[in-house]
Amino acid sequence: MQKLFPGNLYHLSDKNTFISWKCKSCQPSPFLDVNGVEGDQMFPYAEGVATRLIANIDYSDSKGNQFKILAFNHSVHDEDGLQTGRFSGGLLGVAKFAKNDNVWEMRSFQPAVAAFGAFARCPTPKLVEIGEDQYAFTLIHANGGAGGAYEGYLYLIAGFGGKYQPILEVNNYQLTNSSFIAWSGSYKVVNENPKKHFRDIIITTKGTYNIKARGEDEFDVAFPEEIATMAKTKKAFDFEIERRYSFKGKFYKMIDKPIVKFSNVK
Image (tube, rainbow, N blue to C red; front, side):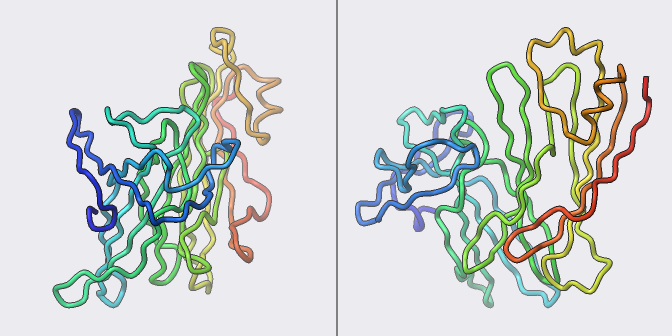
């Protein structure tokens, strides 16, 4: 990590460990923050960069080749190690290594992919196999206003077109911090057709709704369109929404109509 980002290593309290660095020879480039932050955001930051290791992922392919992915979180340097800004994501960086005999060789290095999460903290990426010896990783981006609900999106990050980039964005994947409605999602890669790469992905979202608690919550939320009508006519229910996504050109897109099931309707 210190070879990739030469700088000063800090060990602060509460396991707050990071490298503070500046690159005078680097040409700053704009990056995407999925929060939709306005204005030009350039990396490396002019004020300096604090870089933290957020994932160390080991895996092997079907031929026994061993790989390692290091994922990093970049935020603006702060001497106290703070990460602030509710609607500023943590900028994700990735380095991939392959084992050759007893030596790990770096195969790719992308310091800045895109920014996700809140308070300059990128969620931890999780490895997923989306094709035959084709690996990517998912992360759940969640954010929301002070005291209000946190809405979660599922992103799939994969190597495509010579770089790591988001190739799937799923809204209404997660909702927390609401007293009257909540939902959470899960994903499954479909392995039932001849696709060798970029296989279809099924997203299942399960949740509950209770109108009694709704009057006690000062914050409202935007309902998934699949349950909006039911919420207008019923007092309480559980729901399940299944959506299927297929890779089309450069991005995953939803195909067919969502399958919706209701239970415990009152």
